[in-house]
Length: 352
Image (cartoon, rainbow, N blue to C red):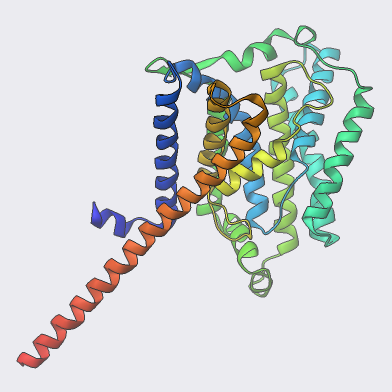
């Protein structure tokens, strides 16, 4: 066990610490809520996480490059409404074309953000705060303040979130969750195995050094915003299929939840480090807390958001303390082994 702790990387240790925190939360709420371990809870969380995980992966790529995308909630809302409007007008469209349309609409918003941040050199927090309001206003104007309802949509969209791939111990694995996990795996492999993926970390760690190394940092940052917009568009399609009823406030608040998932998942808010697998666990943790608080009668609806914020801070603190303890243990063990080796060498030399 101790040897294993010495061999694994800090990122793997962090993922282990996150899993431990999630298990602690499950154990705590299991003592507070009757029938808490009902398989339906996990099905509900996985369906919800499928949307947030896509947004959070895009957010993680942007944050790794030392930026932030606060417009994702508005992109999700606009894409959900635009996609719903398209399929209502053309109900016989190929589903793959509908999904591609949602991704392209989201990517279009990502292009605007990327150009302003990467090439116009405007700070990302200013750009995306502005486009957060701009995209929401465009949604209000485009929709005419009208809503889309489930009854207007083709049956295949409404039934999509309930399609199972398989079941494990009574827990249904929905196709939407599988798509989100697939996106996380692809993003993880691209970031860790491909040179273009490692450029994101290089730009976030030291932009000047990245430029001196021949990396086009503007193109990397633009690509991060483009992917973030495209994934928010795909999340908008999933939001439409899950809820069906789309109003002008659709996706409101997703920007803060995605940042929370990224930070909880261990991505450095100042860029340069972090993983999308940790981000997925962060999204699961935030959603688990939110869903559990809804069922915890000890907390009223008025205090729910405040308690959620407190528990997120507590989770981050617990994760940080666990990580620090593990790293301290490894450093002390390495120093002890080095000291023992030096003493053994000195003893041998004295004997000779």
